Amino acid sequence: TAMSVDEKFCLSEVLDTFKSCLTENKEVIIDKYVAGWRGLVRFMNSLGSIFSFISKDAVSKIQIMVNLRNGENGEQYFTIQSMVKYELDNSLVDITKRGSHPESGCRTLLRLHRALRWLELFLERLRTSAEDSKTSVMCSEAYSESLAQFHPWLIQKAAGMAFCALPGRLTFFEVMNVGSPEQVVAMLGEALPLISEVYQITEDLYAKHDLLGIP
Ligand code: 1PW
Image (tube, rainbow, N blue to C red; front, side, top):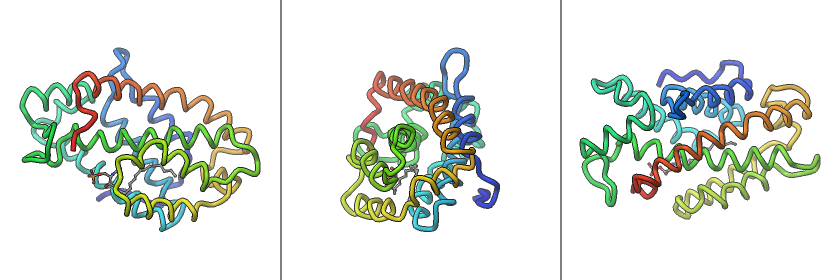
């Protein structure tokens, strides 16, 4: 993949990308959504190599979405809404059991969407956390409440081990490269409602089309 890991990372820029996801009609622009994820991957990689097994899967999902955008029907993948319509109209999604479309846009994006909920819960905990709170605990609580239910036992264990290696709250804030802890908290307070809106719009769309359980 052409993804660079050494670019200077700043979390507020990443969260800004998620802000720019939504069109006026509240459709989610896939290029921006994917760009937001690229930034999150850089963030995870800057947390240490133990997170690379986590980011590796996100990287391969991002690549699937990029390939669809660059493919011959790329314009159908401009927004999540147009993607869902296009793939459903053309029977390009395996809805109830795995079949001939293991890498559909709908399936792939659903994985990122579920992970975004984890991120939202985690960042919200981080935002409201006390100085002596443990990032590992916040991260694993957010994980149990969201993504864990979709992961087999082995991945849950591996994720739990990665969380234990997370740096403390202050170091974590420094890695975000936003400024003082107060500035981080303020930035999160601004960004979270937007991430949450993108999440909710996607969730509602998938629910409407009965796509939340794509295997
Ligand atoms: C510290 C901030 C972290 C927030 C980013 C969250 C990223 C979540 C990626 C978790 C990946 C764990 C290992 C991969 C598991 C895959 O099996 C799973 N992928 C996801 C994204 O959940 C399901 O994909 P699959 O196997 O059905 O193709």
